[in-house]
Image 1 (cartoon, rainbow, N blue to C red):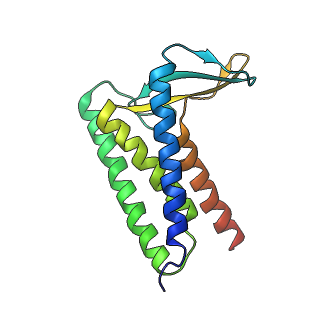
Image 2: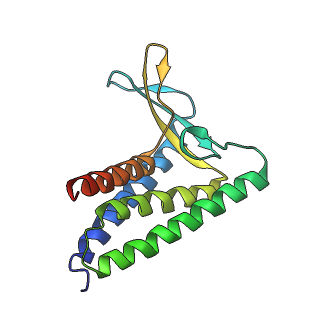
Length: 154
């Protein structure tokens, strides 16, 4: 069975990708220092993450950065292939699309900037959530959709 809503997946993917790229470029241009927003607990500061989630495997050593980037690219490619096969079977792949789009956008950062551009900060009192971006949100949202879908199907 052919995927019947491919256009919707493309629309969602392109929209998330464009929002992420636009906000990252705005962050590069605007948030060199920490900027508090009008929303409590939310601020912005541009950082460059050379690791993965929450800065794990962060290294200034280029070999480590390259290996981590290649592993991420391989996993992204595998998820892309898996998503394509699921879509061909007529399965819903919204979660996978979010993961792929977020990962590809972060890989572009790695290629052009030498790390992922993060800029959104949630904090309260002395606690601060690790800095993140829209692509990271898409990845987490995609994983959440997949988990929710799998729980409902069992």
